[in-house]
Image (cartoon, rainbow, N blue to C red; front, top):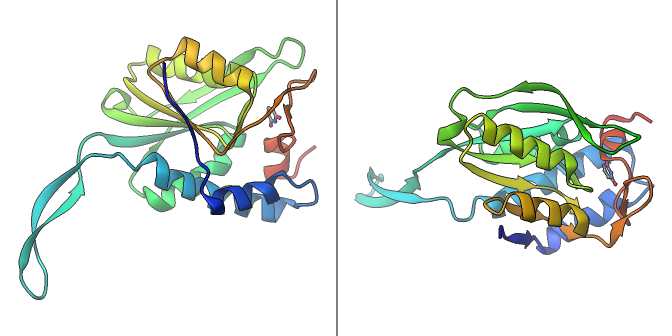
Length: 209
Ligand code: URA
């Protein structure tokens, strides 16, 4: 089974509280999601492999470490996943970004894929799927399915808030995918919203209703 990693760093938790707050406006919401994404990126990249190289400092030469191994692809699920891209790119400026467009059918809650554009070499990359809300798990599950169908071999899922239902779906269907979240919330309500959650992440990021 894939690991569920809850990022309990105090800065992340503090910022998440204000992301949840209904009185937080669009500008601040966007900034906070950006900041939390960067802090999460710090944790999600913790085990990236390193290799030693020779480097000349102004004082002497030494051996020092640089990243090696798979390059990274960021895969935001449209549209709310877009809010997590910039924070991640601040840490990983050379990452490629692929997009998957999915929406939840309001009647069935099932995901419908309407757009997909990916880097050509996804099979050689570590892909980090970005979606602030892991609710039913439908969208993330479908996105991961699409990526695997197109050759992806190494995938992590990064969400701000998750419901137990969504975690279960990903862990059952994609045991090779580790899930990184800031909070495991209580439940889903009858409209498919995470409780207590933060409302509609896309609407809050983009100021729509
Ligand atoms: N998507 C959201 O934006 N919010 C939820 O609570 C669930 C799904």
